Amino acid sequence: MLKVFENISKDIYFSGEKIKNAQKVNIPLPGFVSYKEDVDAIKRELGQFQHYQNIIIIGHGGSRTSALAFYHSLAKNKKDAKNVIFLATNDSLYLHELRTKYQKENTLIVVISKSGSTVSLLESLFYFKEYTTIAVTGENSTLYKIAKEKKWKIMPHPDVGGRFSAFTSSGLVPAYLMGLDMKKIFNGAEEMYKQCGSKKNGNTALQIASYLYHLEQNGYSEVFVPIYSQHLSGTLPLIIQLMHESVCKDGKGQTFFGDEAPESQHHSNQRFFGGKKNCVGLFITRKKVENTEKVVVEEKVKDISLGKNKINLLNNLSYEDAFHAEFVGTWDDAKQNKIPCINIEIENISEESIGAFIAFWHYVAVYSAILRDVNPYDQPQVEGSKIISLKERERYTSSQKS
Image (cartoon, rainbow, N blue to C red; front, side, top):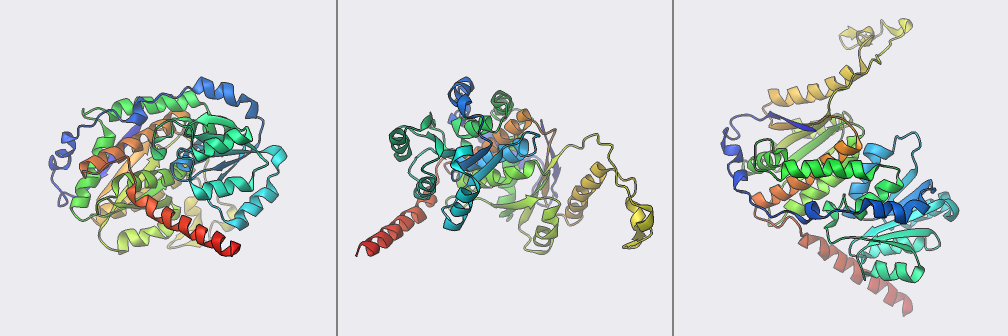
């Protein structure tokens, strides 16, 4: 389902050295692999909510990024697509706009939180307290107790970390409500988990994790991720979260940044080619498809100048070839400038392939963390700001009372 192409200069590291440390990786079966969600139970419990055309998903981090990837990759452009809004802020202006636009009679709230105690999430939820709501949360959490009191539908969130929870109720409940085939998503993930759990040749997750690790050892601390697919661009927040939260600890790990391409070429190519020489390119593309649609240049404009050519140069050009040319331009420019690059090509856009793509990044994150001797599953530096902001809330409320 995924192919990897290299463009890495030999002066960065030598063939054979690039995966020697990766071969020493020995990990137990991750919890996100062994857990099997009951997709039939999700259908039974939530079939009554399928008529809602407006869905507001309230969640932060891993409670949002997987569902966001499913939506942009698979659901957003469906003929019968629902209006799905991802609410990850307690910004009062935005909350007011959403409640004004989406009435409680035709809008479903889906709130997702494993811990059930994220303060800003609860504040946003209270803004829609009169709406029909589904809560996906851990048993006996604060959110669970609120949902019980309010008699909302509760879907149990398993003990799987948020960023790895795409194939649990956290990701599959939104996927089902969007009208996606949960079993196909899960089957694609399961097949990729088998491939990525192997030490044999062809383990692309281990290969990519090793490449990035050795590049970091050679001073490449940043990873530029242009995504040459409108459908796949919604996976970028999940990729960034997986690699930052899983790997960036003890002063280790790389910064990931990117955008949908070719849009990224109009801002971040300047950084990639002209900035510090510490950036590796990780290009994500989809395989070219058979598409007969071509550019048609009207007769009356064909002689207008386009650089040193005429605009008629574009006439009869396949749109697929034109799109691919955008990728080739940046890829070959990087090659000429001896910038290390990797290209991950996804074969097609489907429930199975998106499930596989997300599962692939789960394992890339885990291998990347273990290669650097850090825990892939914790996020110790995330809590500090939460504690400070809660104290600030206490100061505000106490000052109001006095």
